[in-house]
Image 1: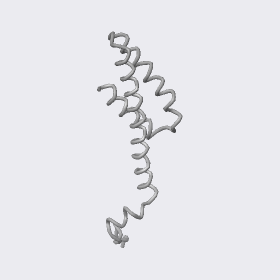
Image 2: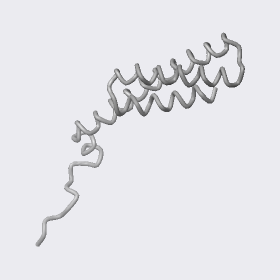
Image 3: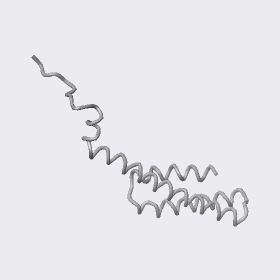
Length: 97
């Protein structure tokens, strides 16, 4: 469970910073670490494989959420008129006398 949450958060960071091709080496790293952890703990093969698949799915889901966050943040930067319409049309400073 902790592994899936960590992979979800890592995927969100990757989604905000990188393109989709970063998922290939990240998924390989997640598989390797999860399988190594399962072997060290002595878990059954099916349990280790299930945890590796859940971690990879969490990584990809987090990447998708990270892309959504990046899209929202970039949309607000690209459309500054939306922010100014919320504050009103009055200027924020008065001209100097």
